Length: 335
Image 1 (tube, one colour):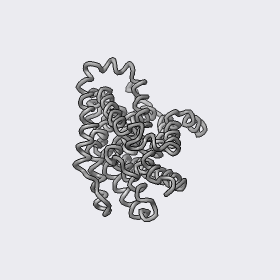
Image 2 (cartoon, one colour; image 1 turned 90 degrees about the vertical axis):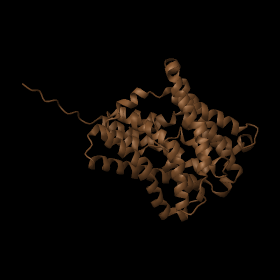
Image 3 (cartoon, helix red, strand yellow; image 1 turned 60 degrees about the vertical axis):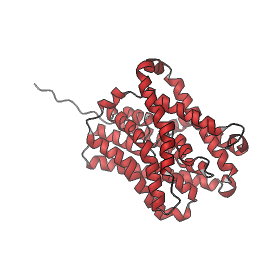
Image 4 (spheres, one colour; image 1 turned 120 degrees about the vertical axis):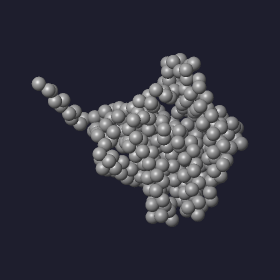
């Protein structure tokens, strides 16, 4: 099973695309940097607007409503995403902050402040035979809350740690214009073009990924020009992968234990574990561009979520198959 997962990752064009984007940014940083020939700032804003417009069109309000009733599940998932993760970062920062490059530590903070991901959370819950409506509701709610809570958490954490704080008002305005506004517009357009949109969803999903790759390339171009590899090197890559793996393992254990302590049935436990442990790359990279702009450390800031994304897909797919193999309860027949 492990070999099968490794083969699937090797065939993942998106993963190869992210690696290629980093390599191209290292070789040709002047093309994608801010003010470069690619005009990355304008292209990024247009791409981000379209991505969230498409998210708004594609989101089914009806499927969200089906998952409303399990309030304990919703409270746990959102608490894991926006309370437990940030507190985990505070602990890691207190223990290891002095040994980790500041921009990379900011990247781990950004990872911990991000919302859950919709597509893979729901897919893993479905594979594991969990509460799919509950997963849809929580992943969607997490994404909407993240538009406002992610910059707020980052700003508060930076102030608490004594670092330079994020301009919260500017961040909220940027996010409202380029994330929330197109999402609302997409919801308004859904009754009109929703069916047409569903027929071409596969191609639109690929467009989302292409926008993310463009943003990754542009982010690393700025960071390479700012001395990303000359100041840090391959040891930073290894450190990032280790940190992302440690965070994922800790969170998977905590979400599983908390779900069991709360008395969740197996279906709700599965939804809680997958929604409460996931972090979104699809929204994370565009939001980073809006929050941090031309920050010289932007490449390091998005590095943890890039690694965490792949690790969560690999680890959670194995966990989902393990959940799926559990025995189903035998129904009792009344004679």
